[in-house]
Length: 65
Length: 65
DNA sequence: TTTTAATGTCATATATAATCGACATTTCTT
DNA sequence: AAGAAATGTCGATTATATATGACATTAAAA
Image (cartoon, rainbow over all chains, first blue to last red; front, side, top):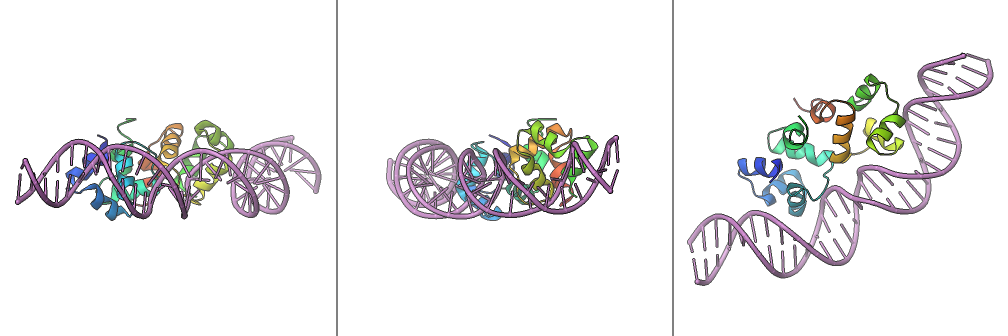
């Protein structure tokens, strides 16, 4: 359970709703949440904006700092 | 001139050296620096690590915050 | 329990990130 | 000014992110 899933649930959104909000397919959100692949920077930025957080919170601080 | 180029120059690296350090082609670094496309999260993370900074410094704070 | 919504996952297709080779232009060094 | 290094850019190719549709499983609601 990575940070995208945490923030999505805190925001009370389903994968489908988050997908719509950032303009991708539901499966893409699912794959990102389960670390199946490597999203583009653009998608990461839109996720951070919609989830009212930032890139470090979503994708950095777990690995580094 | 975006933040990747700034950090690279501060680190005293050429595009070629930075490319080698993060494991991509020189042209990829060039395209990222000139906002020609959309790097993968994986590449963004490697860039931040090699340049001793983080995702927000490189790709977030200009747009948001 | 039965139904419904949400999630995980597969196969195929498409868009685009990234590679490679090459060359022109700009910048640094002498 | 000349030569070398660094950068910008092009065409063509390969790898992979993302889309789409479908279906199985799990969680939630009736």
